[in-house]
Amino acid sequence: MRLVVSTSSTTPIYEQIKVQVRSAILSGDVQPGQTLPSLRQLAADLRVSVITITRAYNDLAAEGLVHSEHGRGFVVLEVEPDVAAAALQTRVDEVLRELRGAARHARLSLTDMHTLLDETWSKDD
Image 1 (cartoon, rainbow, N blue to C red):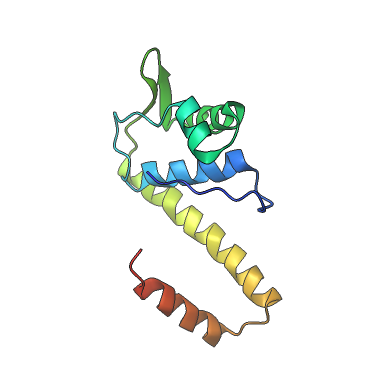
Image 2 (cartoon, helix red, strand yellow; image 1 turned 180 degrees about the vertical axis):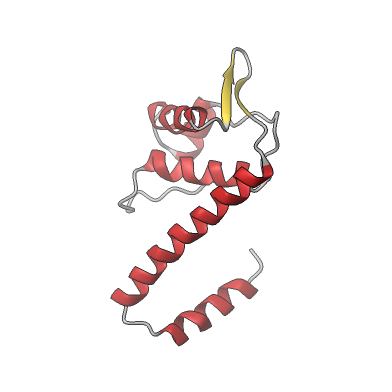
């Protein structure tokens, strides 16, 4: 699981981490029973405080996506496929609304956006 955080974003870092880990869990990139990176290791990798990672993981635990096991850390829980699909669709809807706003501020037309989406969609990441 690869996480990227932006210190220039208006979104708090813990929220950026939470969103990315949630997406990885719901999409199946991280399987039930797998442990998430340790608090200290992820904090060091992302160059953020352990408190930031703890907040993100605790929020995920409150959502029922992970739980903390003594000696193992945070472990991914089983998620119902329908719940995962609905949550992923909600995330796509949120991102599209953000994109629409950014495109309007940049004065991009819908045709411009279709072109950009087609280009982005065809790239191998």
